[in-house]
Image (cartoon, rainbow, N blue to C red):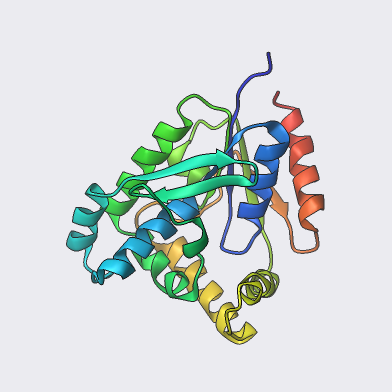
Length: 223
């Protein structure tokens, strides 16, 4: 029987983490652990309850009362917030604008990491985010760090938003990407950074199919 690996896929916003990790999980028959979606679900709860996202105390209290689960399905996994399927509600510009502020709150990250480790405790997962290989699963069997130019990442994000009918300019998306990069890489708690033993893959000029295949070949060496 093949070993059930923990595979960590990290990188900045728009580097292709979500789609790549989801397709890798399907190819391997693993669970897709979308940690970014978990933070997005929590941010949705903040917006719904009209809580001040700049109040660490209020966020800590809310996080302690929040349950987020990922349920595998044919297309990857569905995200459940306190029992409600919110998969199709969590990728909006409103969430984009404050998610980095929310995710740098210590109590929020601690709660999410606890939930993520519980999901992945038995292996057989492809987990993606910004601190998977450094904080959540520092002993992951395979660590991949995706990179791409800010312009290419903004272009991809714009295409995704336009497909959902969101009206926004490339300039606005690029500004959001650059702001999130700065916040994610300079925050005190679990900053975005490449693990020393991670394998870097530049996806700027790769199609999703090409980057999935490239990483799949890397993973085969660890099975």
